[in-house]
Length: 485
RNA sequence: GGCGCUAUCGUCUAAGGGUUAGGACGAAGCCCUCUCAAGGCUUAAAUAGGGGUUCGAAUCCCCUUAGCGCUACCA
Image (tube, rainbow, N blue to C red; front, side, top):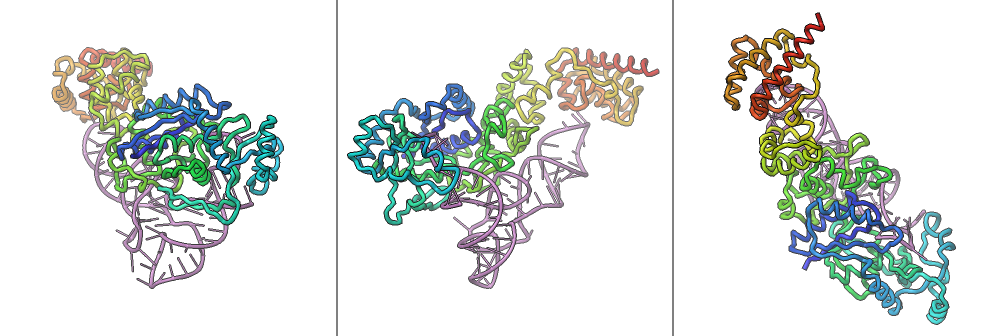
């Protein structure tokens, strides 16, 4: 039975790399009819925040990938302490009474690799017990084997066989001096207790895994299988961080930019994994059908963003592909809340008619606001009347064309073919090219030179609005001419 | 410093001893066309460097270089 977990610690908001780890876990579980567990690793009371927890749930909810079981480490602290003392009783851990301030100086950052504090390992059990009983604070450390040349080995499903000499593993802490379990202990205990079959997490944990193997040994359980994932990094090669890279690292950036969750998931999957064929745009089910750790790469993957544009261009393209794959009804359902949030009131039936016209012209849901604005507004936003002048034409032509278009639209049938026929006929009688006819009309009704296909647009706008806007355009042209004379 | 991981177009990647090193995004150009978009076609663009092994290396091994990670009573 496959059981996997995603175990974020609530010390920041849900970050793009964490989201991907969650997704890979989820995919692996679904692919193998396994169980997906969400576990909040909140053993660090100092740094946990409710806001962070909210952000994690928020982000996961948006992704739309449900989990099957839920745990929170702060509910289980007694279990960890108990486990730590079991390891101690087995002689695989010891109390270290070295004050924190003292070790801070000559330990990490500076010089030689730190393995353990001098004298701490050699303390007799009697003295250790006595000092503890006297209330002296201590850290419980794992007693990493120092005799012989023992190597810790494990096989990673992505990175292959791993080994490390115990001589390079320090005596890491199991219990803090306040009695709380550390991440290593709590995480391993839970992985064992919850019968996790595969630990799927970021590659930054690869070096920690040697310690974890030791802990599982201390716990007397078999290690789960491991699959480490390449990290997501910034274009500058650095690990993604809020401080350095800003809001890009948060999943909410993509959500708020108008991404479809399935497109975002698709994008994240393609960072460090590929289906071994040329597919790029994939539905969730299609990914589930072929997902395996064989397809996971080892090098870190760059999320391609800039200061000006936080969105990876490929993500944007994938989003447009997913938008394009939606039915008109589905897309309308996604667009409606965006439009409503912008304070625009539109009937769903009307929006449903607009949707097909913009579907292949929007890359994000939010684009509806800029691409379809003229469908929503009563009055067009002001535009330069010079835009009404067709190519290789002049203001007089614009005037002439718009006048005859107006006349034609008074009687034309408001369907694609009716409008097409009527306007083309007008162009022919005036002796202008079709484009010279269409473009002024487009600008007149849309208020700009770039817009969806003309006839469908006119159709959706309706005769009344079209005539009104052409009248306004004629007015603009006339006053422009008057002012220029 | 020690230990570990990694190294193919700008980016995501394919090719796990024999290919003109393939695809996608992005860029440029052309076609289509009522503008834009979509679509089609085309172009530019990569095996970090050096040694081996081999008839033959992007692929296996070693070294160098570079990047990243871990080295906390954070996770």
